[in-house]
Image (cartoon, rainbow, N blue to C red; front, side, top):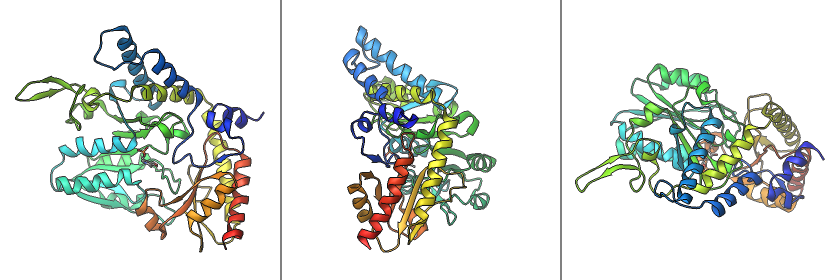
Amino acid sequence: MSETDLLRAEFPLLAANPGLHYLDSAATAQIHRCALDAVVRHETGCRANVLRGSHRLAEAADRAYDAARTSVARFLNVASADEVVFCSGATAALNLVAHAFGATLRPGDRVLVSQAEHHSNFVPWQMLRERAGIALDLLPVTASGELDLAALPRLLSPRTRLVAVTQCSNVSGAWTDVAAVVEEAHKVGARVLLDGAQAVQHGPQDLRALGIDFYAFSGHKAFGPNGIGVLWARGDLLAGLPPFLGGGGMIDEVAIEASSWAEPPRRFEAGTPPIAQAVGLAAALEWMGGLDWPRLREREERLCADLIDGLLAVPGLRLLGPPASARRAPIVSFDIAGLHPHDVCQVLDHHGLALRGGHHCAQPLLAAFGVDACSRASLALYNDEADVAALVEGVAAAVRTLA
Ligand code: PLP
């Protein structure tokens, strides 16, 4: 058995579907068996609410939930587990920042986003503009969809309070030069929010080294369960922010006249949190922490280069993203002249190839590429040469069928 076959066997859905070429991990990665097992173990062994009970089950649930926070902090290499806020996903995390940090902004303050953002890191800032009278600035992208960092200094001003950019585009696959963004943003006193949704399935992160202020990701893109995500923020920053949602668990004291807030992270976790999902996510992240990432990344890069090479040989196909030689993740979007991506993906589905066609919740970026929709293949650690070969063959067949 190859290394990838062994890996695939650890993913129940892939193990049950040997003929499937799953190439949609940028939308959702398959769940690892350890995460599923951890959810089942938790739900059947210590299902109880957290922060509320003094019976043994409740205490076990508290311990499991706290341990999950510690696992996330380790995966992100951050100073303290208290800086980790659990929420339902990256979208919820980004909206939380737009509300809690957004509440500290004044009319005329500025937020800068890039044209490469997923709608989750775009629309909440437009909504904040309507709510709070802030100005929204747009960092353009280059012809290959990378952030145009040369434009950054002139777009920043002393009124810029936040630079919110993706770590890796879910369409072009381009990695952001985070150090360059942080250096320029911090020069004018702006905070940096990094949308890590596409980064986490390619290995543990070192947020201390990145020097950012906020980070958001979803569990389902990191081989964990759905319905769980993380917002990380620097402890001092988090301590100064007001809550977003009100309810149980986030208060210090509630009186008829007024209420006071719990310390972070509880201040930002109103209501019953996704407890078993947090436990499942922690299992997935611990599993990822034990893998040989330099080797896995080298393989992902090689497969990505082979895929790009193969696809570029298809007549009429245009790559929407940087070349294989660039710093890019194995997310490969493409347009085929005269063919609609929905039709292409439907034909590919008949060949056992699962990939996505559409606007990928990144319409501003697609506008920069001059298309309304495109096809996207995204590779993860369980993909191999056979997936790449099948896709290149499938795309050529789709062109023959549909042209
Ligand atoms: N940011 C990026 C770059 C994404 O690719 C996605 C999802 O595809 C999100 C944010 C939103 O993630 P979720 O839908 O899990 O909240």
